[in-house]
Each structure stands twice: as C-alpha cells, then as structure tokens.
Amino acid sequence: MNARREIPLVYFDTNVFDNLVKRSGGLGEADELDLRTAVSSERLILVASHTTVRETLAALESRPEIARAQLSLIAGMIDWDRFIRFSTQILEDDIRHFAFNGERANSVFEREQQAAGIRSVVQSVVDGRKGIKEYEAAMHEDREFKRGFRRGIKEARAETEAAVEEFRKAGAIPAFERWFEDGWEEYLRFFVRSYDVAESCERRGLNNLFKIPSVRAMVGLGMSTIYRTAVEGKVLKSSASRDLQHGVCAAAAADIFVTHDDELAFLLGRAGIKGLRVMSLRELLDRSHD
Image 1 (tube, rainbow, N blue to C red):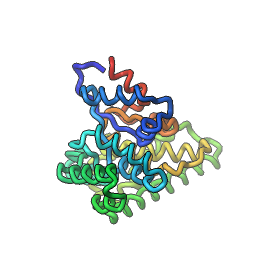
Image 2 (image 1 turned 180 degrees about the vertical axis):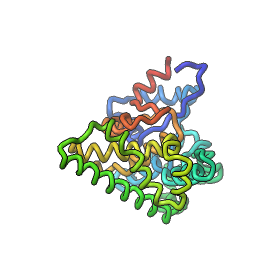
Image 3 (image 1 turned 120 degrees about the vertical axis):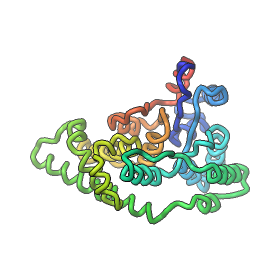
Image 4 (image 1 turned 30 degrees about the horizontal axis):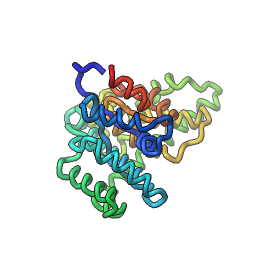
C-alpha cells in the first residue's frame, strides 16, 4: 500500500483469527509476525466489533484454550479507540439520522468509556479471571431493538422470496445483477417499515438511503444470500446471521474486509458495496508491502 495514502481500516472475519491461532488455512507463524509488524508500523489499523468478540466468546466452553488465544490476538492488535458498535445499532443510527437530515450517523464506534470497559472484560477473560456471563452483562444490548430488527429482516426476506417464486413459476428467473437492481428498493422499503421513520426516509429518497454503506451491506448481503438459496440451490449456513452482522460492521467502519470464507466473500463481492474491498489475509499482507 502506498505510504502516501491514508492508513486503511481493516476488519477481520472471526475465522481469520481462528486460522492464525491454529496455524491453519495456509497461515503460519511468519504470517502472524508479518501482521503484527504491519499493525505496529501503522501500515494498517485493525478494527473489530461486538460481533467479533461475541463469536469468539461463544467457543469458550467447547475450546477454551483456542478461544482465549484468539481473544488475546484481538485484545492486543485491534484499535480500541475504534471499537465498532452492534450492527443493529449502526443500522438504527444510520436510518434514523438519514430520516432526520438525509445523512448517515456521525460515528459507528463505541464511546471511549464503553470500549475501555469491554477491553477490560476481554482481558479478564484472556487471563482466566472472568467468563462469558460477565461479558454479556457488560454489553447492554437493546433487546427490544433486536426484535424489531429481526422482524424487519423476516418481512423483507419473505417478500423477496415470494417474488423469486413468481419468477420461477414463470420460468424466467433473471440473473442476480438484474434481480438485485430491480428488487433492492422493495427489499429496503420493507426493512425500514420496522421503524417509525419510514415515511421520512421515503421523502428523502430510498436511493439516497441505499448509498449509506451499512444499509447497502444489509440489503446487498441479504438479497445475495436469498438468491443463493432460493435460486442457486445453496443451503443456508448456520452462520448466516453472523455473516450479515460482520458485513454491516465492515462496510460501515472499514476499507478492507478480510475473510477466509469463500462463500461469504462471493456473496459480499456481488453485493457491490462501494469502498469496501474483500480479500484474504495473505492478500492483505502482500498489499501492505507495496
């Protein structure tokens, strides 16, 4: 990467930390050292989200040593001044802010005190002094908002899947690009109806709301996944909801999303999220030397 450019913000899918710890996926000790050097020399800034930490914590009971090693990597290498909020909160803030003044929200990062508290708890888990229950209690996620978010996604997916079925019956299912272009507005309209600002969003233009990275990622990855299962016959992964959360966080906060999940990379890639590059860790490290 050219030194004259701004330092890129890089978001890791959880599987990248897993590969680094296990020395799997073609990664070895040299790759971890190279990454640490890239971070310490400020060739890149590594960012993470609640989703990153939660997904890692979920493995504590089944594989505590691996989970703690991953958390140690996260705690030691990410920029805690840029700890990313929940994807649901990012979307709510962006949509409500857009309804108010036609722009995205001011920040996708947690406040300093909140991030410091989470960092402290994560380090306590790494040290073996605390477990997942203490972390859960520290996050204060808005459960009522989560229910509204899930309802919006469910309604949007139901409507989109019904449209796909009509195309199927007619024997004329369009290519993804055409289907996406023709259907994103209706998908987004159904989603924003789960808020009390849908009319304001429509007045300001759904096409403008669609340009906001978090919203584009939610719609793009959601529709890409639906098409993948309904038309292309792929089985929906158990991690699909986490993938959506990672996609929204990465699009909203980062320049580069690093994943070793080829399926997720494909789904995100065809969603066409402007400003977000998707690559593997090896590709990232190679580019960091340019």
